[in-house]
Length: 221
Image (cartoon, rainbow, N blue to C red; front, side):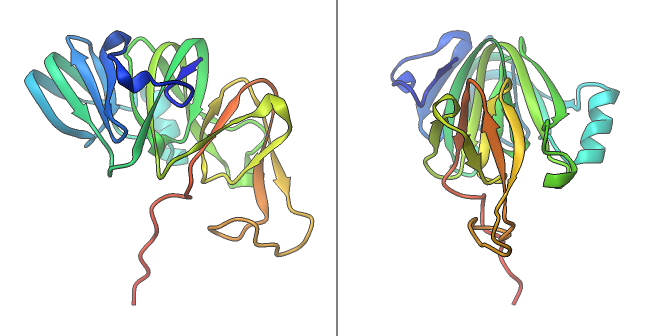
């Protein structure tokens, strides 16, 4: 798996029309059909059609309704240059080679139409983690994800790895995922809810961790 975090992929155009215009904007060269997060188009040059993609079938629609996971997608066709962004978040590219990537739905920006996607429960983190569901993308092609702040890419193969569930942006689909509970009752080791629980990762692969648990929630006065 290749990633823009490992190397300077933004210095040149990428296969299948994907390129980083800068760290906060993705440029897609059409004609190359692309699936993107609804509302992520900030500009385009040329002639393009934007169609609501829906959930991709009744099965996915049901999963999305029940779990609340997944992002609303649009399918873009045409000729020209398409520019995508999401709240000025940083953008990172991954190239899958007949493999899978598990992504938090709110962090999924765009991917090639040759890739398959589905909403799946995170194995080992069901009821204990509040019924955690993510979007899994598989096959060969490019995936663009967003992070709130500059992330870190952790190599799980080096040692057992534990991540706050809201800070985990995406990870290799083949990893073993479980739940780790802090032994000391009420220990506030995370930044958000204060829950003494983290996702535990083991195996061969990586986890991309953002420097935030997401945009802050404004409290009503």
